[in-house]
Length: 370
Ligand code: IPM
Ligand code: MG
Picture 1 (cartoon, helix red, strand yellow):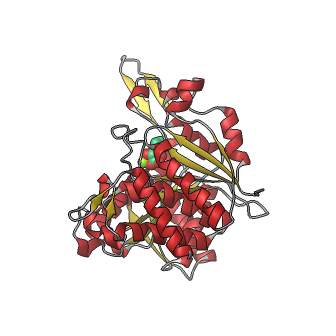
Picture 2 (tube, rainbow, N blue to C red):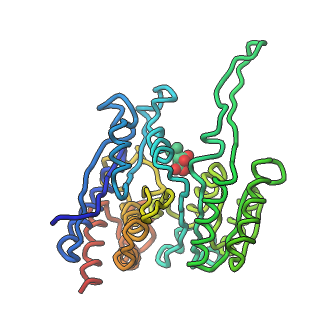
Picture 3 (spheres, rainbow, N blue to C red):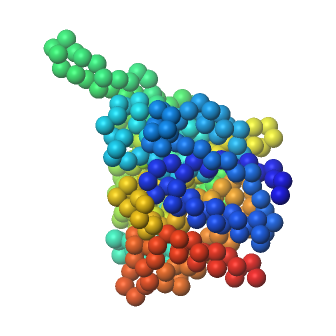
């Protein structure tokens, strides 16, 4: 079947290829049952690319990602690559893709599905029904700012330094993504920084406030310091709808938020670039979990975060809302039927591996399509 949907798959390391395999199963099903097809290409990133090509990501792979309509990323990293130099870390691959494709808005949902309400370490009453979206700025801030480095001081001591920088347009474009998402949800946006101690945070607050007054006065806007936000997320997470924040704070707060749900293995993410005149935008989708080297190759990883990342891909890159919703419902249904991978195992449930979970999902898709 010819297709105009060009999809690049980058499974990466550890459990990445195993969970990606279950997405391929789903894609085959979609071709058969929904007559949807994709032009799929696949490439190496992270440690797999270091081993085969001597670099975490090649220029050709970056070019392939730019040419694709959407990139589905697995996960990268593992202990065998930790001893290589800083520039040879598998993590460089994802940072390079974010930067080269201009993927500045990282959408990280934290949703508590009903069947998993007891998987959280917080009380069920605190997290039941939780549905928040963290929008993390992902091409600026202290992870990319210059100057950066390690220098030797006159006294022989070493000094490491990084720089937090944010310009008006960087703040504005990611805030817009936050406001636009809020409008499609509960219409509330909380902007998070440290305006009390950082100049870049003060500018952040001013720019978001001005943009709100100019273009988004209908959205309920609040501001919060990042440390308070961390505390509030644990105290009463349902007070939030959409959170927009910097690269560093978003990295921390999204990990925190993911654990409110009880399983990292369940959460997808999307990272979006700016739309061009035709509405086309670069986009990369990946699970929030890492490569989990400790369980790689055992066939026990939870494939649902990778599958839900694919659902986000359908929704945001191809406007296939109906298919995305079907997949999300099927995930909930599989869990409700009592199947669990080890990471979300609970008393009275049946523990299954990656492949059985993937097959069960397909059966649910069959039911939904019937
Ligand atoms: C994430 C990860 C990355 C980050 C690493 C792998 C570079 O922690 O996506 O949150 O810090 O952005
Ligand atoms: Mg992180």
